[in-house]
Amino acid sequence: MEWKRPNTITGSAAEGSKYFRREDIEDRLWNEIDKNNHVLFLAPRRVGKSSIVKHMAKNNVHSFACLYEDIESDSSIQDFYRRLCRMTYVALSVVGKNKSLLSKWLKKWRITSIGKEKITIEKNDLDYRKEFFDLLRDLQVQRQKIVLFLDEFPDVLWKIYKRHGNDDAEILLNDLRTLRQTKAFKDVFVMVLLGSVGLSHIVKKVTGRADKVNDLHKEYLYALKPTQAMAFLDYLMKDATMQIDDETKKYLLDKIGHFIPYYIQLTIEECDDLLFEEQRPELTKPDIDKAYKILLKKHQYFEDWDSRLSKYFPHKYAYLSEVLSVCAANNKLTIQEIYNIALSHKNETEWKADLDDILIADGYISDEDDQYQFNSPFLKDWWKSRHPII
Ligand SMILES: Nc1ncnc2c1ncn2[C@@H]1O[C@H](COP(=O)(O)OP(=O)(O)OP(=O)(O)O)[C@@H](O)[C@H]1O
Ligand SMILES: [Mg+2]
Image (cartoon, rainbow, N blue to C red; front, side):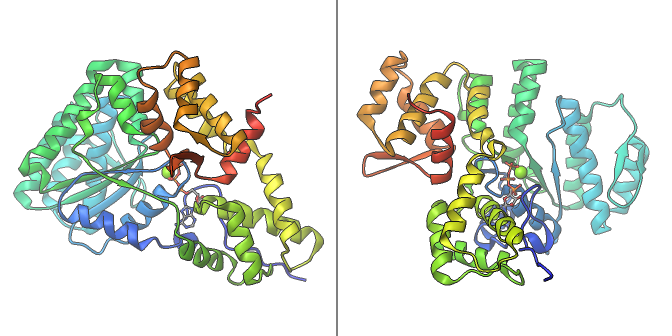
């Protein structure tokens, strides 16, 4: 028989017909953009940030110009501002307004274009930070607002700090402050910064304190609510050969526990593979158990949750990972047990801040009725297999 796959995607961000609308979050972000507030849009890896803002940038119905880019490859202040100049140019040329500004920049920066959105700036010896602030003044004269969605911003700040030192990273942070506090700039330029690691951890490393970004408006992306998760499941399964009755759907969602779209997508793909092999359309509970077990063995899906702790907090890693390992083994932990672990790692002073600002803020565990537990049973089971307590 002809086997129709479910409408899943598990590599890059979900776009077009693969994107399941998350209107509640889109609305929250548009609302801040309307108020000219710069936004920090945060969530752990793979929760769905890029999918949402890519959709927003492409489906903008406002009078301002929008553009999305992943800025991860930038590693200097010059790179960053050169990109902002180029993005502004592209965003404006797409809406087809401000022709005089565009031709002025075209000559000044020596812009060459290959296709509609693929343009490059040829001129290297300009100070693009200065260029960008000049550009904002031009926009202000024209009353033209632009909104840039900048993905992976904390990684860029981290790279600038590592390669060029504190001073450069501080320049960028101070600029963020200037941009949001100077009314003339605020009215014409809004940034939505996306990040999968807490920007505040990095800022703290760079400046010794976190208050430099405290007044950025923060939006957190949460997992789907149960009704949304059910609707998402139907969205993926629409037109698929694989069939799943209501009770089995519920079983599948209970198994996943924490409704991050990515985990639902992975499970559906794995289930579909199992059934496809046997050319059997009805999904059963044992199939789901089997798919879950297979997924846990695929380390690449979860590895990042582990490696980003050792990357950003090498000195705290022993403490943080033991908290997670004991939590995974026992299913829950009390605050007293966490404190005891902290003592064994000589982390008497920062242990609670580390727990709150890293493990809870980054979505590993949460606190309910004085018990700490993993948010995601999937991650818990993976962590247990990766860091068993012998
Ligand atoms: N709205 C959505 N509709 C469909 N699938 C989604 C949606 N959001 C997330 N996903 C699933 O999650 C995966 C990761 O999504 P996305 O790349 O948007 O997340 P992210 O938070 O930007 O991740 P990263 O931090 O790794 O960049 C997608 O490949 C897809 O499987
Ligand atoms: Mg992303």
